[in-house]
Image: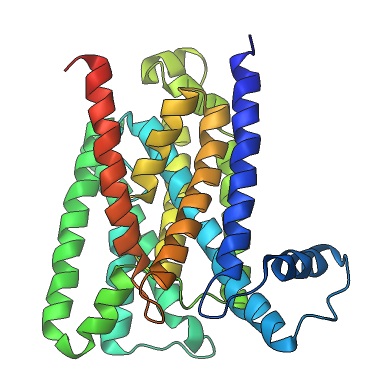
Length: 347
């Protein structure tokens, strides 16, 4: 019989293979259909300078390099970020209903974007990235505000206090966004479309902005796998084993929130990814974060690439907000997960 570790490694390999297939299909399929062989050859040539692409037209190469590839990379990064942040939050808060936005970061980023759109704020020099930069600023301000309030109320930063503070701030932020929508009704369509999420504005320049931040956060979070595993026995047990629970929680909260704030700033609100994907992963690999975190990233990237493909092809040439598609599928998947969980518990 295969050991559990070997089985997980095998499943992980299959997951990566499925992800790569989804990426190739996503890059190839659209209003202009591109031969799969062209896509594979072009990607190999771009990444590794392998093969001859002289028979691929300049138009197809432009679509691949400037439109499709950046969009798939952005979907992969955002999907992996939201799933990874969700897995970390669920582990720290010991709550399967938690996700990366539990500290109100996504809501804070949404307020920033809503204000920037409604007031037409543009930053000097970086006007193209005004909404992104303002969203990130508001995301950070929201994070530090919530953590400050939690620390003042409960110096131990207990799970219930953190969740409650995050929920209250998210409700407040939602009210502020609704108020802005009511006042600046002329921009309501643009604001609503952004809050529902979209990858249509993905570009190479945006990928180059988000990629280093993503890699830094991922490296740090993966370095804390042993601490996350220890947290499963409870904070008292973790302290007994030498873990500085307070600083570890704060640092993981911050890095997870950075992933969420960055993702919302780039693509708008995309719901259910950070909630559903880690729950699916736990059904497969159980409790070891050595597998939970990488699996969550791969599955999250695959899920968002697939839902983006659906959102831009199902009513082509028009495009659905990707947040609508992820919420539709995510809600159904979550009900199924909840049903099975209750069934196993005999409730």
